[in-house]
Image 1 (cartoon, helix red, strand yellow):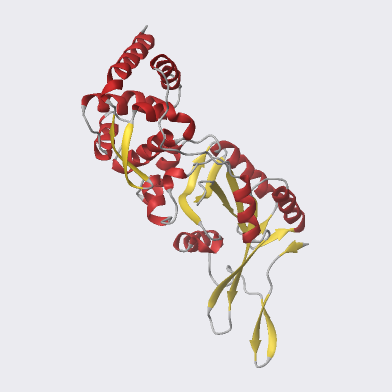
Image 2: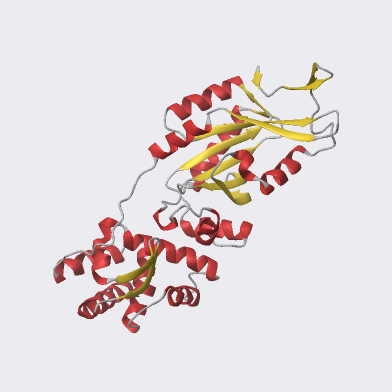
Length: 332
């Protein structure tokens, strides 16, 4: 048994079952379906933005990679006919790999598909979302798309969803009426409002703040050295790009930072530089990083945007000494 959509057309007061398949209508299921989804991803559900198509991974090609308004990545797996448990296993394999992707990698995929960096693309399409507050790829969702689904897989999806896994399936039905009109009907295994509520509950919230720290000089130096020694892209970019710019210039604008990111080879174009800058800006705004805000001041022309970065005069010597110590350690 499998779950599928049945459609009847009313003809002269009688119900006639429509059973035309895409193949019978001269359609190519995979190619046409991909094209329709590209043109109108709303068929997959609300608040899903496509950022990649045929995305290469070690496990194979992801049909579509999406992102939602909470920053979760969505693995979208299409099947030309019936969804089986093999489709779920494949999607889980994809999810396990992309779970380790950072913002730079995701932005690279987005740029290839859309021509825009991730930050710019999200800002353009999710106008009601503060992109700086998003936790990109904190968790992953799986969305299976097909024309019918095995009952066993449907039960598995419901069980996984009830036990904390963000998963759903979209079941489609191609319809061609006697008048030649072509339609697509859809249904989902987990009602969208329930899935949306469960996804929000699973989301981890990180507190943000503009309040600076109040460390004495020695404690401030120690905590900054520890942070700037982390082997992560953002602390290293603050250390090697933002701090040097702020020591060299009284005020550092967003455009200056983006230009320096490109000059230093951290970004290939302004779009990617903008995405990296968004990540740096968000890092500075994390409540627990109050030591960063103690040595970096900024303006906020908009609630979601930091501008005119600067190091207060009283901390410039401290920051310079920290950078010198780290450089000596690196080349020792």
